[in-house]
Amino acid sequence: MMYFHAKSVWRFRRLVQSVAHALKLLTCVALLLASPAPMAADGGQNDRLVLLVRELRNEAGDIVPIRDEIRQLLNFFERELQVKFEIRRYPWTRLLNNARNGEGIVFGLSKNRERLQVFQFSEAIYANYVWLVTRSDASFTYNSMLDLKGKTVGVVRGTSYGDDFDSQRNVLFQVEEDTSSNGARLKKLLNKRMDVMAFGDRRSQADEVTQLLQRILRNETSQSDKSMEQGFKVLPKPMLIDELHFAAVGPYYDEAIRRLNTAILHGKRSGEISRILISDR
Image (tube, rainbow, N blue to C red; front, side, top):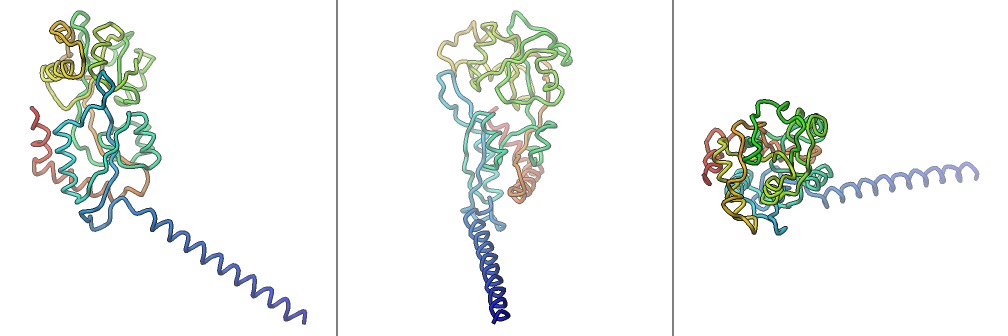
C-alpha cells in the first residue's frame, strides 16, 4: 500500500509540474501576441511605427509645427517602408528618456560615446551644421573650441554637440541650458544673458542661417524689430558638422532600423532626400 501511495504522489507531482510548465508557455505566447513587433516583416500598409520627434516651442509656449521639408522627408520614409509613423513629440530630455525605455525610434539623433553604448543608430540621414551666434557688438573669431574659453554658451537642454564639446562643458566654458524656443533664445542672447548661442540647422552658409534666424524672430516672438534682427551675427565657421540618424534601444527595433537603412541609402542614391531637404530654400 505504501508503495502504491508513494507512486501516486510522484505521478501527481509530475502532473502538477507539467501543467505549471504549460501555463507558463501559454502566458509567454499571450504576452507576445499582445505586444506586436514595431513592423511586420512584410511591411504591410497598415503597420504603425512610433517615431519620437523633438518638440520646439515659440515664445508663447506653443509647439512649433514640424517644418514642411521634414514632414516631406518623413512621408518619404513612410512610403519606402510602407508604414505609418505615429509621431510623438517631447522636449529633448524627456524624448531621450522615453527612447531609452523602448517607447519608439528617435528621429534626428547625433552620436556621442554615451549614446553609442545605449542606442542602435541608422545610417546618417543628413548633416546638421552647428553654428555659433553672437551679438553684433560682441563678435569674435572662432577657429577651435579654445576660442570659447571663459564664455557662456547657450544650448537647448539635453542637447549634445559631440564628445569634445561635452567634455569641456563647465570646464573651458560655461553652459546655459535653454528652452527649445529659438526666438526666446535669441532674445536671451541679445539681452546679454549668454555670450554665444549654439544653433543647429541643415544650412551650410552663415548668411542663409542669418536669414532663417531673422524669420524666426519675426514669426516666434511678439517684439521683433529691425534693431533686434540686426543685433546678432552668425560666425562664418560652424563649430561642428553633426550627422543625424534614426536611433532606438534594444533588439525590438532591429528590423525597423535595417529597413530604414535601406531607405536612407536608396534616397541618397536617387537624390530624393537632397531634393526634399532643399525644397524650402
